[in-house]
Length: 327
Image (cartoon, rainbow, N blue to C red):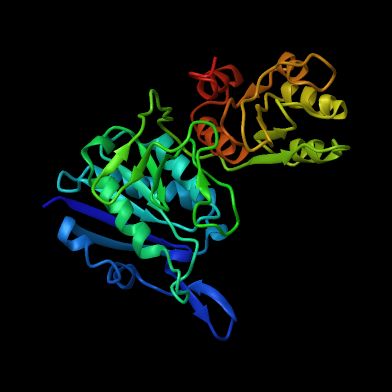
C-alpha cells in the first residue's frame, strides 16, 4: 500500500465554532480530521504531522519557507509516495506557489482546505481531503509539481487563485482552467503543464512590498517603501499593466538603487503586456526596467520575487527568472 504524509497546518478545515469567541477558530488535530474520512486508510497508509493550527492570515512567508523545507526533507524518504497539506484558504495559493517553486521531487504534493468549518452541516473538509488523497495517489500526478485540490477540481499551484470569499468553488484557474476533475471513478485529467518554474537555493528575502494601482495613487507610498528598506516591489497595475504617471520618478529611484520592480495586473483575468505607449503605461515601465509577471497575479509574483532575491541581487538575472517562458 502506498504511504502518504499528511501535514496539518490549520485553516477552516480544522475549525469549529468557539462559544466564547463567537466564531470559528482552529481546534481539530490531524487525527481528528482524518477520522472523518474512513476511506483514506483503505487507499493509503497515512502518516500524520500536526505542523501548526493557524488561520490562513496568520501564515507568514517565513512559515511558508519552513513548510517547504519540511516538505522537501520528507519527500527524500523513499517510503513516502506523496504529501497532502491542509491549509487556510486565505493564503493557500501563496503557500502552494512557494512550495511549487521550491519543489524538485517528482513526487506529487497537494494542498487542500475548506470553506466551511466542522460546526456547519455543509463542512466540505472531509470530501476535499479525500479528493486530495486520490489526486496524490494518481500516477498521472507525478512530475507535475504542487496541486491545489478543492471542490472536485484540481489546479496547478502556479495558476490557482481564490476568487470568492465563501463559495465552495472559490479556487479557479482563470485563464487556463483546471488541470483535472475529481470524478467518482477516477481523476479525469483535462491537460498537463507544459513547463514549471523552480527557484533553487535560498534564503528567503521577505522584504518585498506590494501595491495596487488605482486612480490618484500616491507615489509617496512607493518612496517610503524604498526609503525604509524594501528589497523588491510588486505593482498590481490597472488593465494590461499600467499605472498613474506620477509614480515614474519613484520607479526611477528604485532602478537607481537596483531594487527590482515586478508588474502584475489587478485584473482577475489576463496577461501583462507593454501594449500601450503613453506615460505610465506598460511600455513606459518596461523602459525603466520593470519586470513583467505575465499571467501570474500579484501575490504569487511577490512570492517568486522573494525567492529570486534569496538567490541573486542582479536585476537582469531576476528578470530572466521571473519572465522565463513568458515571451
